[in-house]
Length: 448
Image (cartoon, rainbow, N blue to C red; front, side):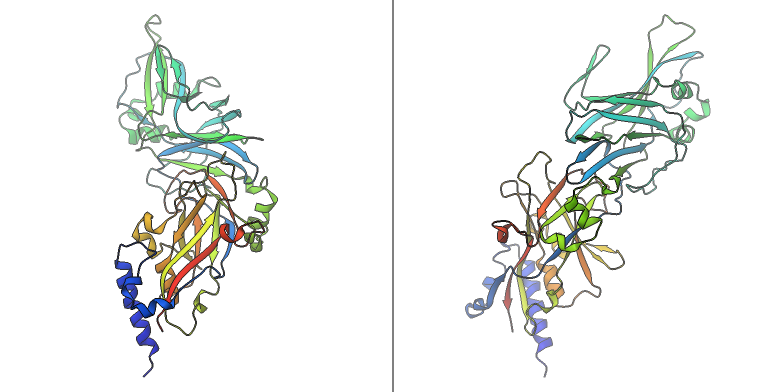
């Protein structure tokens, strides 16, 4: 009788028991083995790992909780510019602007949520009215665009001041960006004030009449930052200031159009084809020189750069023997000691087959504490625990061949994370590289 299938069955059953435990992952399995079998427990960090950076085609950016603006020139990743498209909704249906409304001003208010980079660089923004429909339930990606009317509504310089309160009349408001949409032209303000009654009966009718705004950042040539604005608390809005022309001495009036979670919206990112990136990065992502991943690896959010990870000889690991994987850690370290541009708080690791189908790793379902991906600021390191994934590979449990891809944010979800990081490569030529290199450390038991 051929004993190998029986041994494989034993190994599989043992693993089922091991991964049902919630003990320290470093100790899993040791108390289940006879004392003599622990002599067969071994650890290696010499498994061949191939890793290199590649460009992300795009990421989903509709229904985001934050709107992104700004531009920055990173000395390594080059130029990134963020813009957004959004609908606006009536704050109340059937507003009455009077018989002779006169526009005083039209101001877009965007309340700061967060920022990344240098806020001392002057930024520039342009605003246009959408001519294409922006449908709430439509899926949009970071490289999508909609058509706009040619009328320029705003053409404004400003400095990012995310902590400075703003005085508006007698009120002091939280830090926000104010963009005047009536300085260039009074067109949009008057369009709203003189809208037909039918367009003001409901938001569904209003977005047919006024489809929304495109707020576009202008690329900077040095420094710069990317900054976001919250839409979930409805503090970001478009305010129409006007007065009654029939009684000009009457106090000024105002009406708000809100940007909220019910508005259709999506973000557009532009990395300028990485023409401004460092030569090290260009060699990997533009010249497709995968060997460069031995030195450094690059990760960037906002549909930027991801890392492809391969274990080309994993199926030959322990060939001819039955192996139980006790622990498999993919470990890597932040190459930079300067934290001016903060590294991502967490990363995502997914598997993807040759036709682009994305799937989760089984270890991810054990929770973040087990699976990892969170940045350790003290050691400047990350890890992913991929024990169950490794065991499945050894047992030929996958019908397709998968590579692993590491992202700053999960491409399946519409998240706004501008952070980036440079990692030590798989074989960096630096002192102490054996401990900081991008590596897979596996603890395993030889069962047969």
